[in-house]
Image (cartoon, rainbow, N blue to C red; front, side, top):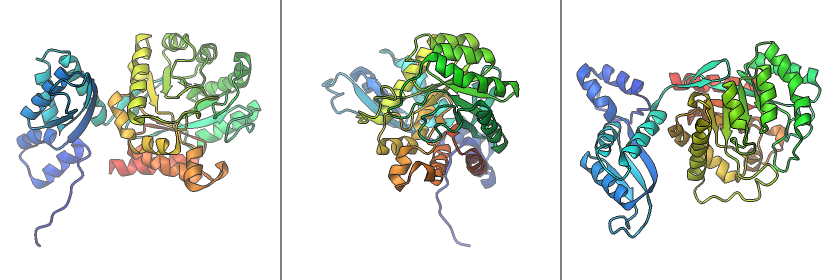
Length: 399
C-alpha cells in the first residue's frame, strides 16, 4: 500500500490522545504534544497600544502571532482589538509572560485562561434550585409550555390548566428534561400582562408539575412571579431581559439558589424588531452576556447556576440569527451552558418560505447545527423530534 495523506480533525484532547496511541507515540511524547495539536484564534477587544504591543511581542516570542491595528506601533489609536493565534502550548507560554507584565496584562492573562477553559472543556456543571446537571455529552431538551392566549405558535392551546398539565406530561414522556412554563408572550409586539394575571396562569400548572417531581423553569421577567414559583419549587427562572426589567429579580434568584437563564434582547418585545442592525453582532451580544453574568454574580448568583442564551429572534434579522447559530461556539468562552431557542421562529419561515405550522424540519436543522456548535440546552415545542435529533447528534459527537 502506498503512502496516503488526509486531514485529521483534532476536536478534543481525547481524539488527539487516541490517534497518537494508535501510531505508537511514546507516552512522554504524547504529554508534550497534546497541547500543540489545538490551534486557537482568540479575539481580545479594547486593548491600549501598550497592552497590544506587549501582547504581540510576547506571542511572537513563543511562535504565535497577534493581529492588531497598524496604528498601535505609533500610538495613533486609543484602543485596538487583537486576534491572537497559536496553539494551546503557545497560549500557556504567553499567559506566563503576561503575568510578569504591567498595564493590567496579568488580568488579561486570567481572561485568556478562562476563555480557553470554556472553549476546550468537555463538560460544564449547571445547578438548579435542587438539581445538578452535567452538560456537554448529553443535550438537555427544554419543552415549551405557553399558558398564554397570544404566543406566536401555540397561543391559546393550553390556557386550561388541565390541558396544560396533559401537554407537559406528554412532553416528559417524549423526553423533555425540563418544562419551561410561560404566562406572558414575548413574541414581537406582544402586549404585557400584569403580575396577578401571570400568576393566575402559571401557578396551578407549576404546582402540578413540581408535585410530580418534574423539573420546571418559568419564563418571566417579574421578581414577584419568580418568588412565588420558586417558593412552589421550580428549578430555574428563564429571564428574557437578563435581569434588567426588574431590579429585584437577581436578589430573588440568589436568595432561592435558583438556576437563571440570561438572554440577550435589544429593547422589549414591543420594540425589539425596530432596530436589528449591529456593527458586530457576535461581539455586541458576547459582551452583553458577559456583563450580565458579572451583574448576576455580583448580586449573589453562583456562576454554576447561570445559563446564557444569545436570544435568537429577539431583536435580530434573519441573517443575524443565522450568523449566531453558525458561530455559536464562540460563546463557549463565557464558560457557561448555552441555551438555543430556535423553535418554529420567523427566520426559519423567511429562509424556507413556510408558515409557522410547517417549520418543524427547519427547526430540527437549526438544532443539529446548534448542538454541533456547542449548544447544551435546546428549547423546543416539538419535544419528541428534538429528543431524537439531539440523541443522534450526541452519539455522533461521542463516536
